[in-house]
Each structure stands twice: as C-alpha cells, then as structure tokens.
Image (cartoon, rainbow, N blue to C red; front, side):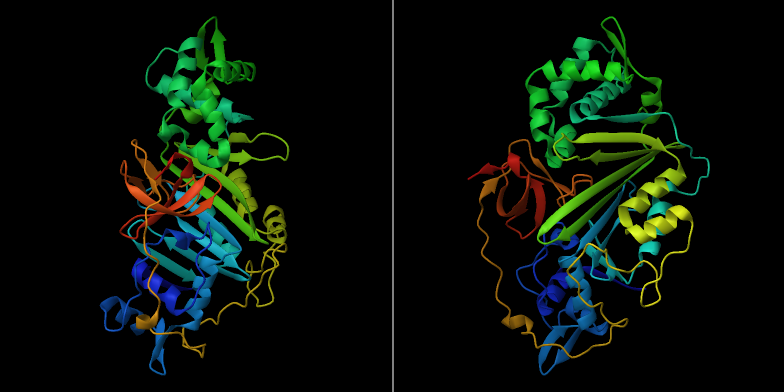
Length: 433
C-alpha cells in the first residue's frame, strides 16, 4: 500500500494542478486550509512534491501525477466516506473514502497534514476498525443496559447521570431544573442540534413540561427509579454510563448518490471491561430515536461490519465464509451495488503518465476576494473539520469574529476566516452582518 503525508499547501497545489473539482460537503478535504495561491517551482514544499513524482514537468508546464489526481478526485468527490474518530490523542482516528472501485485512506489531521494511503480493501478496513474499537482484551462481555427512546429522554437521562456524578441529590423538581439549565448550554446540546434536534433542545430549555414527561417515561422504562419525589439512576445505567470512558470511537458512513447523501453513525465507548454502542435510529414518519446498549466484542464486530461492508461481504463475515473475490483477485474493493457513478481506479504505481495539459502555478486564477457575511456570537462557536457532530471540534471561534459563509448544508454552515482558514459550524448561531 502506497502512503504519502502532505501539508495543506501541498494538497491545495495538487488539487489545482490536477484540475480536481472542489470538495463536496462531507469530503475529508473540506477540512484543509486553502491558500490564496498554489506552491510555485523552487519553493521547498513544491520541490518535495517533485522529488516524490507527485508533480511532473511536461512541455515547460507542471501538472499533478495522474495517479495522485485520481486519488484526490476520489477524496474530493466520493461515493462513500467512513470517518473513524477515536477519543485518544495517541490514535486520532482516520477517514476512508470510496469512489467507484477505489478505496483510499484520506485522513486530514488537526496539525495541518493529510495522510493518503491507497489502495485499501474493505476487509482490511474492517480489521482496522474492529482492532481500534475493541482492543486486545478478550474479557469484554455484553452487559444488561439497553436504552431505546426519544431524544428528550436521552438528554434527561444524561443530565441525571451528570447530576449524580456531581454528588447532587436527585429529586424530580431538581432534575427538571437541571435539564432546563443544561439545555441552554451549547457544549451539551451541540451534538443534538447538529443532528437536527435543535428544536427539541429549545423546547427543553423553555419549560419543565417536556422534561417532566421524559422523567415519567424513564421511570416507566426502569432507567430512573422513583421514591416519592426522590430519584435515582438504575444500577444498569450507572454501571454502563457512570464511569469516565477510557476511550471512545465514532464511525460516520456517508453515501452519495444522484446528488443526495445518506448518513449512518455508530459510536462506541469503552470504560473498563464494558463497551457501549450508541447510534441514532431514523424511521420515516417517526421522530429520531437514540439506541444505546452494552455489547460484546462479537456484537461490536457485527455492528462495525454492518456499517462498512456491502451485503455480500457482510453475509460472509456473519457466516464465517471467505470474503468474496472481485475481478482483480482482491477482496472487498468492489463498488457498492447501489452506486451508479463509477470511475476507473488509477494504476498501481506513481509513475507519470500522459495527461491533458494544466496551466502552471503562476497562470492559475487567484482565489475569490474574502468578504465577511456573519459574526460569531458572544459565547464563541465550536468548529468542525467536516459536517459531522460525532467528531470532536477542531477549534473554538472567538466571540464576535467575522467570517464568510460560502456554503450551507442543513443546520451546518461552512465559514472562511480572513486568513483563509475554514471550518464547519452550527449556522443557526451565526449572526448576520
């Protein structure tokens, strides 16, 4: 497998010299910092690209290598994106994209570097994910905790656990007041808001009525225990959710088809010898529900496989049969059967090949002029490298900072700062200038 580690300016240059279309929302490359111009010959970072054969000179003009152009095209215009965020500074996670039959790791790091590794098979990806999520400890068993319910109920249960960890005595009135308070705190509601549940958070913050209804449902389901006006959290919920996690992981799988996208999310948290899986469940005509449950390693493996494998390979994993082979003799690289858009995979080497001429760096048009359109609210604003609330924010924008909104995607807005740095934020909280 070939791998390169490039900085943002080098990636920007390869995108320009390869004529790659602008990254779509959801592409990992939306997280790179765009510079006002590409690198020019004789600059050290440009020379490094040339020494690796990633840019080649042809008839006094420079162009990106055809293989790297294909890889970056897959990263910028993918059919699928699988993001794995790991709550561990030693293992920051990774992203894998698919376009046609090509699977490529395309991980944009917080330090301004991008890792490109290719080709990757789906069977290799499954091993990477299961290893990262379940570790090497064989003592992990499924526990007794299981929650399936409304967003309101999940937020109220989370508040009850926070109050309990803080040493507060739980009462019905005290918990309802805590819910109203917590529902006004952006750091606690951001994940729900960017899942499209901002209205539910606003209603919880506005009165205690919805919290009261949620408490009654949680008591009826056994997640909260009532003794008059006093409350406690069930032993199963405390065992599963009461401790600080040792590690957390999330997988976001986005599929693009005919201009539309669909997203699946799976989060796993490990605390001691327990693994808790978390996923939103969407059913047409019904409000979003959240599903939390303790799982064993085999159960986690099945959940991960269902997230990343096409049907034929998923059946093979469940039954224990060998992975089905593709036409080129490798398992796991076939395109998803529902995908219509296909592009040929690049050749297996990075040797230059003839390609249409591309204008040299000096002839490329300058970036559009930056003009602020909105301001960050006085409380500041968390920023993400991709429109995915399951990942950790990469920065916090300063209060009253002026930004330019150049794209919207649901509740998300893509903003550009005056220095060219860009990120995704909760667009509902921006203040229009």
